[in-house]
Every structure is written in C-alpha cells, then in structure tokens.
Image 1: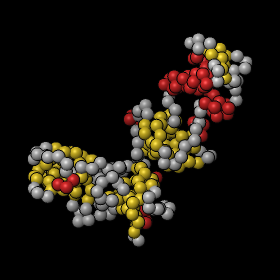
Image 2: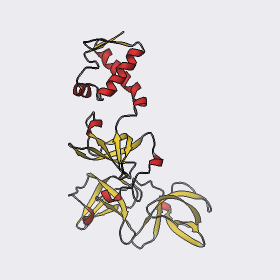
Image 3: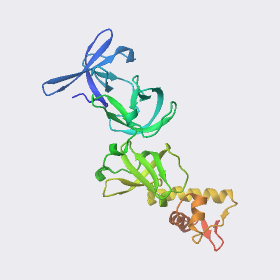
Image 4: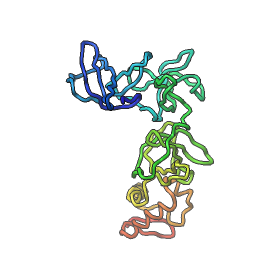
Length: 278
C-alpha cells in the first residue's frame, strides 16, 4: 500500500507527456500515485523504482514528488509560516505543496516568516496537516534501539526542571538542570546522548558524551586554557563546582577526571594554588 506522508520507493508503470504513473502491488491490489513531469529533472524508465514522497491532493488522489520533505508523517520539527489566511496558515514543508496549519491546531498566535514546532499528521480526510499540539504525537522510546548519540531540537526550557528536546524528530526528552553547563535557545539544533529511559518511555538526556568518550575533549579544553594563561590555572580538585561550571562548561566530576588523567600522563602538576603545565 502506498503510504501517505512517507518517503518510499515506487515502480514506474507508465509515462506520458504530462505525468508518470507510479505503482505498488500489495497482494492482488495495485495502488497508484501520480508524478507530474515538471517535477522530474532526469529521464526515468518504465519498470524503474524511484524514491518519492507522497501526499493527497484536494480530490483525494495520491501525488508523488521527488522533492525531500522537511518532515514525514508522525515526525516533529520546526517549519516556517509562509502565508496566512482567514481560515488558517500555511507552512513550508519543503515540497511544492504548502502544509496547512488550521486555527484549531494552533496553541499560540503565529506570524508569517516565523518558525514553529509542529507535528505532521492527518486530518479526517487523510490530508496532511500540521499541529502545534505536539505532546500527543511523541512516540515511546524503545531501549533496544539506543544509539551513542542523536540529533535533537530544543522546544522548551523550564528553570526548575531543565531543557526539553525533540529527539530524532519523534521522542520526548529532557536534559536535567544538573546536566546543563552552557546557554541554549528554543529552536536550537543539538547533539545529545540518552542517559536514561524512564518508566514512561520518555528519556533523560545529556549534551555531553559518555565519560569515557568525553574525557579527551575535556583534557584538551583544560590544556588550551592553560596555554592561553601562561601554562597555569588557579583551579584544582578543591575549586567550587559553580566556578568550574562557569569556566569550563563541565561538572566538577568531569573536571577532576580531566586533570587526574593529565596528571597521570605527566602533562601537569596539581598544587594547592591550581594546576601547572610541566
């Protein structure tokens, strides 16, 4: 079955002067989509399989495009408002057809030229629409799929809790306050690591790598700051954690690991006044 709102490979059944007919066979049922030739930049052959994105037009016909969408069905991300109307607004999905955001799916006033976090979903007629009510569109995280790092986008910040991130366009995650060592902004793209999968299948995150992978970066940062300060720094394992956080954008524990390794490898001396390059 050809999937609405998804990128997929379909077979070219026929080509005429205006369009290509693309098909997929499921059992004994042949499903069809139509690709306008003005969207085609190279020659295709009948029987060839091509990668397209599918959406439904106003008549309920499945339309294919070679253009890459910014979001697929079920995904969450920032899209720009490119046009406003009395009945709603239209957003840039990255394809020739603009994406409709109904007033009923808005949670705040939106303005042309601004970008907003939305989920790509379907209306009652199976047409693609945007919604700003993203919380119900997050999916549960499967611990078996955990990777070393993920791409994310900051969508909310709460001083008493932390920074909320859309992970991999579909998971809801939070960086706790104790894991924040720098300034971030809503809409900022970030690299993050999953530190914990909670019982509710949401995830706790960190902007830093795992300790074993982060220590080399932390050591280089300490050495770089020492080089800029004449080969010494007034910080050691007794320095206040808040000072370490401000100066190095890392935790006291991370700092102690870094200078401990530097000491063991013979790069520095640790004194009561701080650290000195050998």
